[in-house]
Every structure is written in structure tokens, then in C-alpha cells.
Length: 274
Length: 284
Ligand SMILES: Nc1ncnc2c1ncn2[C@@H]1O[C@H](COP(=O)(O)OP(=O)(O)O)[C@@H](O)[C@H]1O
Ligand SMILES: [Mg+2]
Image 1 (cartoon, rainbow over the protein chains, first blue to last red):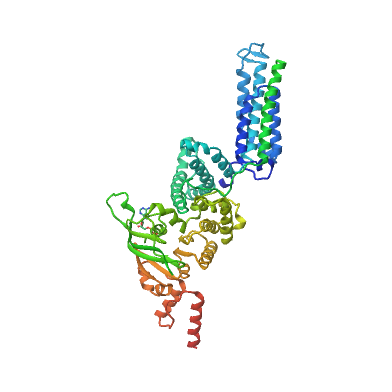
Image 2: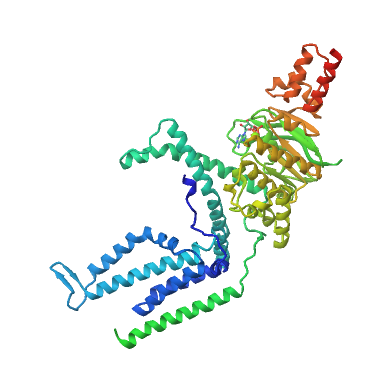
């Protein structure tokens, strides 16, 4: 069933990472991403990968699940590696020289670095954020982090509300899609036709009823929200108040340490002049 | 009892705003007042104007002509509109299309959040509201995991948390299975017992018989208005405007037509059984 698709990939739990404030986690991910691109030698990159593994351990999510999340991007990783291997040129003598195709040591090094970067990026950010933060908390965190932008008339609250409603209605609409598919099948519609045009045509009888119903839902929901005194974020309070705790301070301290270590390790290579 | 919602010569025309010439009045020169603490059922066939009337009660629609007041506040006064809506809550037909948030408790918190209530007070109201519809154990569930009846009870809790004085149910049981319908009706009756003003729009006559007063709508006007016995005893008149009567009322009506001596306006199963037993004993 379509309904079984897990959304936002959140795994509920009570680990150290689960308990951090969402705003902290968003900032940490940003720091982590920037640092991944700062790291430029074997030492700092190894450290990145180790950090990613430590984060996985901290999240209490099984390594299997994390590995599974890498699978879909495997092709991208391999592609990037291959491009790096074959397209890097350098002044050294090539390791392999097959006429047009020349492979240099630098190319292989670049490829390995790229793989490590992408892996740390995916593992680090998914464990820090998407796996350990429920979509609703994440939305809350984003809304509150971006609050200063409201002064510049950026409709931060409206975007957050749209996100929440989208998250709320995705399961409902998936369920409905299932129903429509069954109903159309019962009328003899086939969905396994070949060719792009035919496939698109086959999906029209699903899309049209789905859109009609989505618009009707939107209309009714808007009235229901008005009945519950919704008027944007004017004078609006929240039941759950986000509060930074000592855990967040510890997390920030670690992230400063993390940046320092990466910068230091980057320095080692210059000292050794590799 | 004091007047709570009052309509004076209200007319409502959906096309009036767009001014495209063709006029069709969904509500025609209608006057009605609803007493505080009463339980009013509104019945009428599709298109008779029930939902339009409901939306006039809490200022979602404002009359084209005439005046609607809630607790003395005119619904066309924009400054008072949130005061009006807070006092008159509304539960709709489709349980899916009125739940906003991704967890039950977040959704129940929606109205008090909009009203700017203090966080600790919101928590308190949410817990109480969920308790009163018996959904406390589901507070962290996602709405998509609930049955229709449960979703509808969450929607009711979302309104209760607003602490209204009146709740309108616009065919809130129409999309539910018999079990869900029973759950929701029980919740409604409990609310009424605790002094809530209840307006129940329904197609199910056996729900309407529980009310203190039944208002019958036809073509945008009130056709009949009275207590359930008065209204449902006029079986022919109801049939004329394509409305049913409760099953037992129908049974008693047919038996009386065939010459059996049964009292008029029987509404509930037990009393009908009682009346039939009496008839039976006399016949022996
Ligand atoms: N949004 C709308 N725009 C135009 N006409 C409407 C709209 N909603 C309802 N109507 C019309 O108003 C009349 C009353 O409808 P409604 O109040 O929904 O009746 P009920 O709830 O009793 O079925 C109907 O003739 C209907 O077609
Ligand atoms: Mg209606």
C-alpha cells in the first residue's frame, strides 16, 4: 500500500540526539555541512567519517537502517568517483596510460575524498536531523529560527503552516490515491501500459479525481480553520515552547571542538607538506 | 432561559457578492432565536439551507440582509468576529478535512493557540478536552491512524478546547459507520448535559428526537418549529418535503391509520413498545 511509505524518515526514540532542541540540531547540521567542505586532507576527512559514526552511535539508530539510506545515492557516489578518476589531470606521470585514458594518483585521491565527503554528509545530516527529529518538531524549529526574517516581511509562519498541513495531508491523499486506483481498476483501467505518453495518459484518471478532491478538502479545511479562530500568527501562542537546555550547550561546545579539530588536522598536512 | 443566537429577517444570497445578476437566496427572510443551554435539531433535505444557516450562526457568512447576533454581538462587526467564533464552535461532516495538525494533541491545541492562551493553560485545556471525549490515550497518535468516529471526537475536542458556549454539528455523523455514529452521539448528549448549547444538523431522525426542539428547513425558510413530538406527529407534512420520520413514529402512524388506537407522536423505541403492549393487552 502507498500508505506504508514512511514520511520524513523519522525514527522515534529517546537518545541524546532525539532530546536536543530542533533549533540546535538545525544549526549543528549547518556547521557540519560547512566543515565537510572545509576538510581537505586524509586526516580531517577520516575524522569526519569517525564523527559521523559516533553520531550514529549516539542516535541509537541501527547501522543497518543508516546503510540502507545510503543505497539510493550509491549511483551518485560511484558516478562522482568515476568522473574524478578519469577527468583529473596533473603534472605527475600517470599511473595508467591507455592513450586517451590517463589515470593519475591525484584523481584516485580526489575520488576517495569525494566519496568520504558525500558519505559523511548523508550520514551526519540524516542522523542529526531527519532520523531523530519528527517532521512537526522540525517545522517548529525552522519557524522559530527564521523568526527574525518576519521583520523583513518574509511570511515565515505561513510557510511553516503550509508545511504542517502538507505533512498532515500526505497520508490522507496517499490513502485516497489507493482508493482511486482501485476504483479505476474496477472500471477496467490498466496502469501497466508501455511508453511514456501512454503511462502519462493512464495516470490522468487518477490525477484528475485526486486534484478535485484535494481542492474540496482545502476549501473545507480553510473554513474549519476559520471556525477555530485562525488568523495567521497574529497573537498566536504555542502549546509546546521550545527551550534550550544544558544538553544544547554541550552540543554547541562539541561542535566548536569539532571545527577546531578539523582545522588543526587540515594544518598537519601543510606541515608534512603532502 | 435567555436568547443566545438571534436571527432577525435574515436573507443570504451566495451570488450577491459576485454580482453576476442571477439571484438565488439560500436563506429567505428567516427569523429564529436559540436559547442558551438548549438542544436544537435542524433537519431538512439537501440544499434546504442548513449548512448556510450554520455558517451564519458563527459569522463564517454574514447576512446579505438582516441581522445575526450572538450573545448580543453583531456577526457583521469585524472587531467582534473572533469573540463570536470562540463562543460558537462548529464540527463538520468530513472528519479528515477539519484536523490541521499531525498529532491529536497538537490539533486540539490549535484553537487555544490561535486565541493566544498561555502555554500551560493550553496544556490543561487539551488534556481536559481529550478526557471529555475519551481520547486521552491517543493524544500522541497521528490522525491518519484513527477511525472515523475517533477522528470526529478529536475534532469535537478541538472545539471544546476553545471553551465555546455553543457547538454546531453540521451532519457530523453522516460519514461514520454505526459504531462511530453512536460514539459521537453519546459525546454530543454528554455535552448537552453539562450545559452546552447544542445545534445538531442531521439526516438521522433518531438523532433528532433527542433534542428539545426540532427546526425543519425547506427552501431556505423554516417550515416547522417545535418540540420533537409536535414536529414528528405531522408525518404527511414531513413526507411532502421529502423528509422521513423516526422508524417507530412511522410504525405507529401506519397502525393508527389502520384503526389501531395508539397515541400520536411516539418517538422512542421503549415508549412505542409500551404502547403496543397496552394495545395488545386490551385486545385480549
Ligand atoms: N458556496 C456556495 N456557492 C453558491 N451556492 C451555494 C454554496 N453553498 C451552497 N449553495 C447553495 O445554497 C443552497 C443551500 O445549500 P446548503 O446550505 O449547503 O444546504 P444543506 O446544507 O441543507 O444541504 C443550495 O441551493 C446550494 O446549492
Ligand atoms: Mg449541508
